[in-house]
Amino acid sequence: MIDKMSPQSRLILAIALMILCLIFYSYYFPSKISTDGENVSQIQTAAQSNEAPQVAKITANTAPVSSKSVDTDEIITIIEAQDFEIYIDKLGRISKYFLNGSDFKDENGERIQLVDNSLLPLEIRFSDASLNNEAFGKSYTADTKKIVLNGEPETLTLTQELDGVTITKKIMFTKDRGYDIEISLSTPKDYFISTGFRPNVLADAYTFHGAIIKKNDGTIETIDDGDVKKTVTFPKALFAAASDRYYTSLLSNFDETLNIVISPDKDKNPNIFIEGREDLKLKGYIGPKSKVNIHAVDKKLDDVIEYGFFTWISKPIFSFLYFIHSNVGNWGWSIVILTIIIRLVLYPLTYRGMVSMNKLKDLAPRVKELQVKYKDDKQKLNIHVMDLYKKHGANPMGGCLPILIQIPIFFAIYRVLSNTVELKNAEWILWVKDLAVMDPYYILPVAMGLTMFLQQKITPSNFTDPMQEKIMKFLPLIFTMFFLWFPAGLTLYWFVNNLFSIFQQIYVNKHFKRLKEKEKAHT
Image (cartoon, rainbow, N blue to C red; front, top):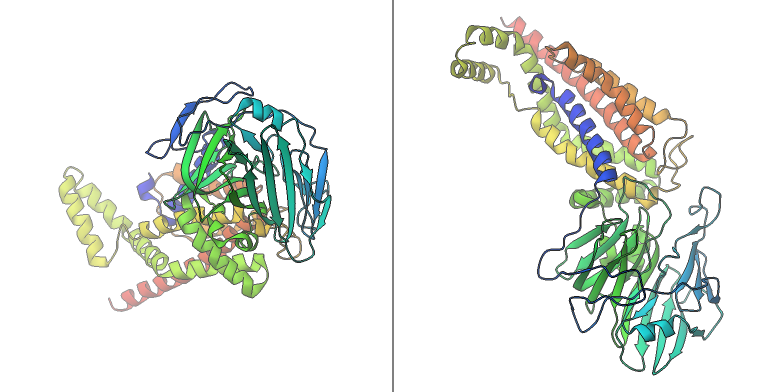
């Protein structure tokens, strides 16, 4: 049945099935972490207690112990800046991190708060259980109660006096949401410091939530929420980031590699810990995963912006989209321009595919005659059919290459437009005030469905089965239902893509008609 469809019909059907598979797979089967290879050790998760489990050692240390609950409202220092506000609690942790500005409001109009109380950034846990218990019972002291960032970086010094060891944290905050931290111990002790649990702002089934680790060989490991059954270690890593769709909390060191430990919580979510050492120096960042903010901390952190399997093509697409926006100034029109440029680049392939399929449709009656004539001899049938195609310059595979190219591009753009925080609260025109959320009036999804229906009407088809035709006629309605809840930016891309396909198909149909008229005139 499928081999008798036009390439456009096969493309629409293939993408519809892929979207269904993507949504189903993303929701029910999050990607699994790789725990094979020389650089990864595993242990069984310890019981939920304050004791450290025994671990296959990457050094002489054990895995992080559990922390005791504390009153996170006991704040010892506040850091204020134009774009954010940070609260430091009595255990020297970032207990609250507010984003300022109109772009970062929740559904109630309140400031977005990025820090989850289940595990806080800069929390230190000692491998020695008694020392760890003492550490969670004694407060840090701060050299200042308030820092206001107006321009130059400001340094906060936190000190904790324990039995036999003094911990000092020097944190230099900058106005770009980044910070540098130096940790020193008066006496060497085995300890771990955490990035904190991922920002818990927007939970959905279609985008990544979990931990991202960049290893020393440059490869990226992603670990989804709910998928950590055992503690996993990553020796010699460069950074670790706890991320959701738009935001991240990370720690990095590109000068000295880090030993990263991923420990499951009660819900099998990844908790990130970095193995400590004397005079540990780290770069940190908490905030949106925007290119400007990430690069302000370190351009080598670009891999924190991760698009899954299609990252290799999504990143250059986003870079090009970002370049267009830097010249246009509107993300909506940037998406329109990007879509047109992609279609222009693919135009020669899609044009040849459309022409080829018009020829195949024109030859369909003669192919049927050959099928009747050689119904008992498949070999002769294939030979005569191929001779017929060759004589008339028709390529039965001509419509496949454009389809194969467009599918990965579609999913790469799907990832870009679904995960790009720059689209949050970005306006396009009139009613579209936020390209990162669904069209509130459903105008774009309906327009997308209508253009898909129109495209079907003008696209030559060679259906031999009435059921095929009915299925294809329902696809615009199915797609419209899908896109009702998709981000407006993604729906805009597909709508413009449909418009371009309509104009291209009209041109090809007229061109093919002229060719046929010329052929008749010469006969």
